[in-house]
Length: 139
Image (cartoon, rainbow, N blue to C red; front, side, top):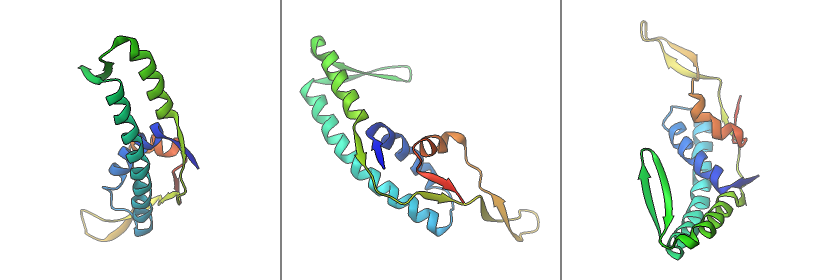
């Protein structure tokens, strides 16, 4: 599957959240393997991005919760934006096993302590970039 750098960055942060859950072993292994592949992809992205930052002498300007990337030379801002956008949209072929999330997970009743299955509940925000890019499925 081809995955743009921007999608890999989004998916990585959500995989970290998913990795904090108690999942069946198979699903946990799939999360770890995909994280590793995305780490490799993101590592290459960061090297090239940092090269662009150096080339255009970029600094960050923070206003509220927005970060703006500003070049030292204003004439280079458009070229920098164009190259960064191209880098974010660049796709890389990623071969992986889709993460198979169970509909239910093992749990213990708080009142009587017996074992039971309960629905796996995740915030849509956690799943959004993973579903959009077809990285997970429910089994």
